[in-house]
Amino acid sequence: MMPVLEEKVLPKDGSLTVPVLIVGNGPSGICLSYLLSGYRPYLSPTASHPNPILQHKLEENHHLSIVDQDLEYLSEGLEGRSSNPVAVLFDTLLLPDGDYGLDHTSPLFWKLESWQGISHLVLGTAPPGGSWNAMEGSMLTLSFGSWMELPGLKLKDWAGEKRRNLRNDRVTPAEVAAYYQHFVSDMGLEKNFVPNSCLTSLCRISGIAEGEGTSKERVTQEQGQEENSRTATQSLWEVRGFQTGSNGVQTPFLILAENVVLATGTQDEPVRLGVEGEDLPYVCHSISEFETALVHSWLSECAEPVLVVGAGLTAADAILCAHHYEIPVLHIFRRAVTDPNLIFNQLPKVLYPEYHKVHQMMSQQNAGRHSASYRGYTSFPQHQVSSFKPDKKCILESWDKCQTVVNISMALVLIGANPRLTFLRDNGSYLGLNAKMPISCRCNPLKIHPYTYELLQEPNLFAMGPLVGDNFVRFVKGGALAITSCLVKRRKVQKDHDLAK
Image (cartoon, rainbow, N blue to C red; front, side, top):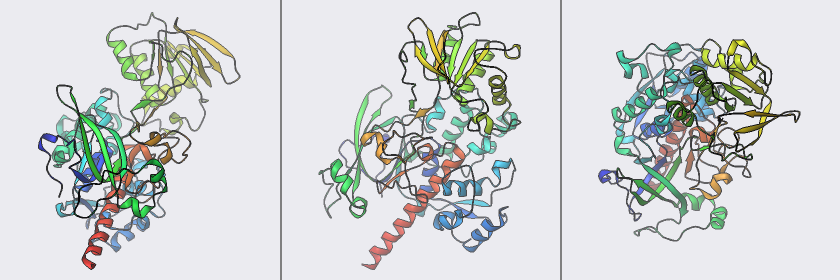
């Protein structure tokens, strides 16, 4: 049994060993804490799944929770918008036919079986909810409210009569953040969460000799690469970091963990263009900096335009915000407007009218020209930034190498974000699908076992959420199911082994 922490202060001396340490307290970490605390999904005797094959499989072992069943067997033949089969399985169970906008009732019901729980801690640099606490609170999320919710508590039930009748049942990030914090409290998970804690180092150390404390002999990088799986599974993780108090003082901690789960998300490090002048003061990499400029009236409709770089949803949000304040915009993006990989070509127009509006703005104009339909907006498809100049001139380059010089008041480079994995060797690049490339949630996710989410290069190290390519909340829950199922089954094997001695 893990000792209770007094006032959530982590020890400095490695005296605490945690069975499971979760790094990241966003929706991924929250959902995993929920399952590790003993909440279990079962097939409801009064509901059925619209997929008859899956329903038949569920009925075969209806007395077992989904956690205790064969996830590979249940996942077989299912299709969805995630490359991870367990993510598709759990999404199919929680939101049957969710991709079609149908409101089928989930065939699952939840029971709290506390004796099934596994002790764990959840570290996060902010309150529970992760990056949702820092997002702009007025814009609508891409996903439906039901897609943002966690098992066991419907978002509509939580909001009750206070809930606004938002278009297409979409919600604001502020509402989502408040919902996640309430979920942690309502489900009794608060004791597992240690906010304002930042990880700085994660390394494997040698195992524990029977009857002794931890061995301080660290495994070197070379030894770690040569270490076989049997030895690795007997070792521990040494976890170092610091906690930030209410007075701003940072206090270091050192704890040990048998298993570590990376659930850090993707909002830590903005992706940069890597061009000349990108560090100039007028070049920004977050929409919050743009909002600050608007609040302080640093921009106006009479000023030079704002340059928005990117063709994702964050860039679209910035364009919509600028359009609302009548701030002129120059929009530059690498892809053609008709490129099927462009996110706007994948969103149903009826469900996402504001993003369809941005797509229309992009579509109805040629490079460097604007139309009366969208006053103040000019698009540059199939262009890239060549350089930023100190006098706020920006040089753009088209696909055929033609250059255009534009005057701007501010540049917003919104081309995505990468996770902060500086606490891992080589920033974790050796754990990716392509070990020679930096970890990217979209281009180079971490390489995991498809049914356990354990990293193939590091036993007892797991990853979930955007780190493994599940960039929507509705799919991160599958990682929680896979990891919990793996740990529960391993614990059972170990218990049976001990009894057989």
